[in-house]
Amino acid sequence: MLVSAKEMLTKAKAGKYAVGQFNINNLEWTKSILLTAQELNSPVILGVSEGAGKYMTGYKTVVGMVNGMLEELNITVPVALHLDHGSYEGCLKCVEAGFSSIMFDGSHYPIEENIEKTKELVKIAAEHNMSLEAEVGSIGGEEDGVIGRGECADPNECKAIADLGVTMLAAGIGNIHGKYPDNWEGLSFETLDAIQKLTGDMPLVLHGGTGIPEDMIKKAISLGVAKINVNTECQLSFAEATRKYIEAGKDLEGKGFDPRKLLAPGAEAIKATVKEKMELFGSVGKA
Ligand code: 13P
Image (cartoon, rainbow, N blue to C red; front, side, top):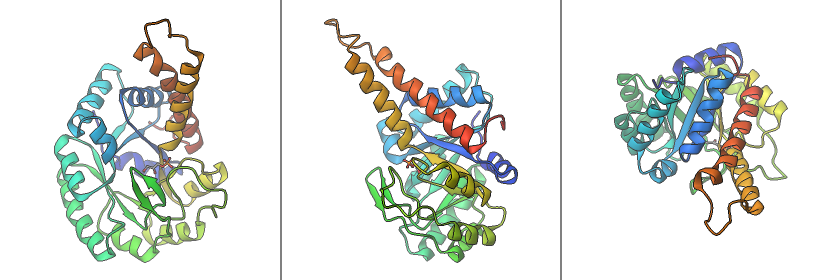
């Protein structure tokens, strides 16, 4: 059964480790992530962007697929199904479809409007026993065609949003989605420290988990980050393994590729990436 992310993140913040959010795009990715979480006895969050939700034909399909897998793969570790960077309308659709967690990304609105909309969603999420992630200060880079600048959040605005009763808070601290440029200045631990001092027990979320050096990940966890999002790194490992398989040309005997064989190396590569991240985040054995 899908669970809200509240309990797993409260435990992670108290225990000074982070739960990974791995974004899903199709059946193979989802299966790889769930099997790895079960094997490592780790809690896990499956992230679904609005674009990925559309690609998979809609949120109801995603809920059906994930619930089916939980049962048929005998997954017993805590799993949350979470809308990633949702719009207000997207959040309502996921509540309706049976997600267990939503993110409302109101970071592009003026703070007053972000507060207003987040406040309404806090109420709705509570009525459905769902966790809610809010965002202050946009995360840079490109996510599903949405381009952010990678600003640092204002700690006082973070406190204002945290006080609304959200479950977890994503705050921009110089992080960006996708690969980091060579001249990236690194995470702003000063900002993170100030946010954590003002928001206390609130689990903080680090987006853009791909390509952040290990020492920065560990320091971020020590300063209150309890959820780390990873997407691009799974995409890269999946694509690379698939490319190698195609280049090896094994199934080209006039019949083309068997789709199940074609996608298997990519699925294995995702398992390896997820395992590496869960070990780094410290969530192994914490289910
Ligand atoms: P990356 O694509 O950089 O791993 O970031 C993922 C993310 O933050 C999803 O919200």
